[in-house]
Image (cartoon, rainbow, N blue to C red; front, side, top):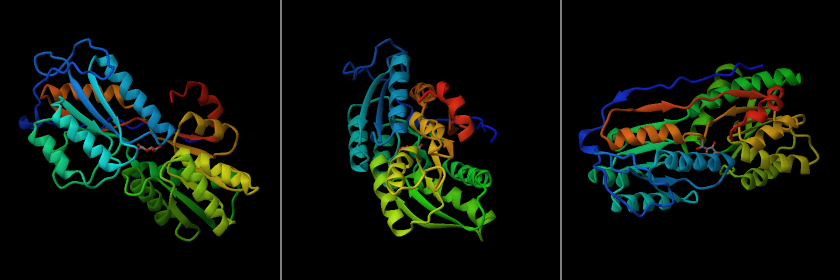
Length: 339
Ligand code: GZL
């Protein structure tokens, strides 16, 4: 049984650039959050602008719930937008938060590139920006004050190590033909989960593992179902599915069963996230192992928001705590799963 791995909060204190310290601004147009006070500079109520990716998966639903509940608990005014997985919508939302002069902006970048221009506008407006969940590629590190989220490359490595255990338990002998369901094209979790898994393949399984098909399912169930059906058409003797999230794995399971195969037996499945439906599928023997990716970032994010709004030092990189789960653990873990 795999040991649960907890990642310590890795913190590197970095002073918030003086110029980024936002001065608190009153904003009575609160979007439904309670109003009990704590705030940036001088104790005024903090207004947070949060530009969410979308509502594509169970993980995202849990992440949104965590952010909204934590903002309410903290007494902040939360302005929240759902970009429906479109970068242009996230950029528009960030621009509107700048225009509304919020105290802090936080967002989960749908893809890693294309953010410099709008983040420069936030910097000019002296509004600190916090990345949550996903990171960006930029040459200007001053464009955001902190990134709180998982280490996706390590999640990919953990998926590779987990597959070793699952193959051994299944008594698999000989070559391993792997299908990979990738997350959203250009998104950090998709790029990095693929990278980490490939590191393990290249280092330890050059001769026996091969990714025979790989395509994006855009982190959705519908995408996973559709792409897996196509995979099975082109490669009926796939041994393993590595899905970058549970929702795509759950969609793929429908196509695997429609093809008359047994998920978790004829095709071994390794997934990432650890949402409740993923654990249910694992307890039914349809998923063999899940690398957890914790969506419950709300409380830690609100602590960061307060510090940033007050111009205090904030940790530059905060990694979330998460574990690895095999089928045998699913039933026991299910009752205590928080998302
Ligand atoms: C990972 C997160 C990913 C999840 C998917 O932190 O960005 O996006 O793994 C979600 O379920 O759609």
